[in-house]
Amino acid sequence: MATATLTIDLDAIAQNWRALDGKSAPNIETAAVIKADAYGLGADVVAKSLHRAGVKSFFVALAEEGIIIRKSVGNDAKIYVLSGMMLTDAQPIRDYNLIPMLNAPEQVTRFRNETSDLAYGLQLDTGMNRLGLEPDEFMGVKDAANDADLIISHLACADEPTHPQNSAQLAAFHAMTDGVNTRRSLAATGGTLLGADYHFDLCRPGVGLYGGFPFADAKPVAHLAIPVIQTRKVAKGETVGYSATWTAKRDSVVATLAAGYADGLIRAMGHNPVSLFAGDTPCPLIGRVSMDLLTVDVTDLDTVPNELHLLNSTQTIEDLANAAGTIGYEILTSLGGRYARRYIGGA
Image 1: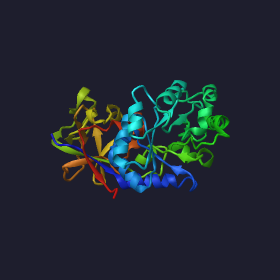
Image 2: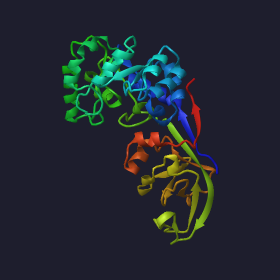
Image 3: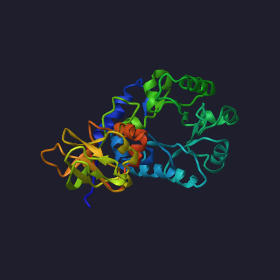
Image 4: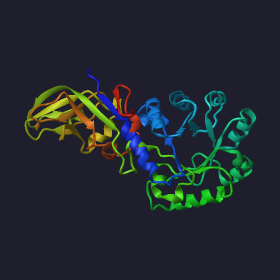
């Protein structure tokens, strides 16, 4: 079976970072969140490109991810681990000069006992109720705050600018940290777009770097071309695919393509209008998304090309997410391992 090709535009990622960096004052650092294999796009390659573009600090979810970034960018970048310090993390944190964002009293205690000579950060819960020290817990370890490299919290509703929880979390972050002599960070992509009140000392965009909402001006980063395996004529009234969900309303030509939900093309996107493109011409996705196959109505093409494009500058990850009833994050991080990956730009 032919292989679909996922093309990742490193220049577009760098341009998105520069655009988000331009939203804050010159004295405010803009880092890059590169967890989950750079949102599915290849952390080692993406990190190296962003480092060349000027990124000095990276955020990952796990220490194992931090090791990959350290090997990619060398020793002069800061790498923060959002999960903090889990039970087996002491040695890799030391060996690879990672900075754990300690998020519970027991993590602070363990860090002081096992790796007290290394840098650390603190993560606070200002209302999301996920990770982070709550106000009373923070007060119990506040003597550690002034020695921390960074103090952060995370906004729950930053993609909804008028949501009241944004201002409530901002007020809580101020109440917990004002007067502490440590750099602070509250803004990811959405917080960066909320404006200067949310920027503090460091912004840490993630999904906006990779072309995702809520950064509406982001350049598309991921482009996906899928080979055509076969075409067939389908008579008016015949059906296509599992459960016979699509019926030809005219004599049609249907192409079968080599990708499916095993490649991260979420089955639910077939329930709403999605097209694949031959150049600028859209061709409707029809029938059910199968594990390894898609079916596409190519009746209106004069010539069926060897491949059709599902992600391009016209149809982005957000378009697929909307069709599937999900978010761009899930589309990106689901993109499968069977694709041939091609990187462009980044020099």
